[in-house]
Image 1: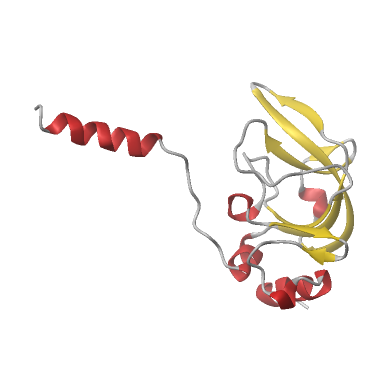
Image 2 (image 1 turned 90 degrees about the horizontal axis):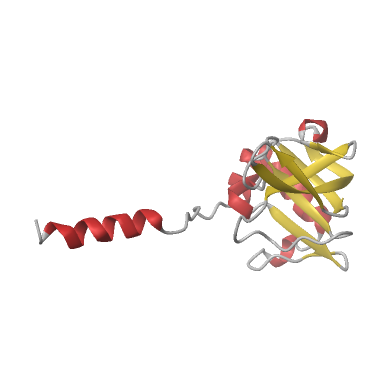
Length: 153
């Protein structure tokens, strides 16, 4: 029994560790997303849903790439980006931030596809995601690549 105890402790420690999601390719992200939009974030609001507290960012949708933004949770009469308060490893969100967002439609810990991989900030007209191919830093080219990955014009 004493020999088994350290192994059990190791197993429990592994289960208690942080959840990690596999890295998805851009094509995988595009196919999994229910809604893909180019947005500008509004000012964050706190929304209670039973025992859960979400940080809710109203979205000013400037372009619909795929899906229907009306299927997203609503905040202030607009589609919203709802993230569970306290979730770690989220991208940094700020009011008036522009981005291409690949989203699941429901309220989840994080609605970003690939557990936070589906967030592509646009700064000074360029998509700013580490590791993104140089050819995709132009938002229009990234949009076209996302549509091609989904097989839509």
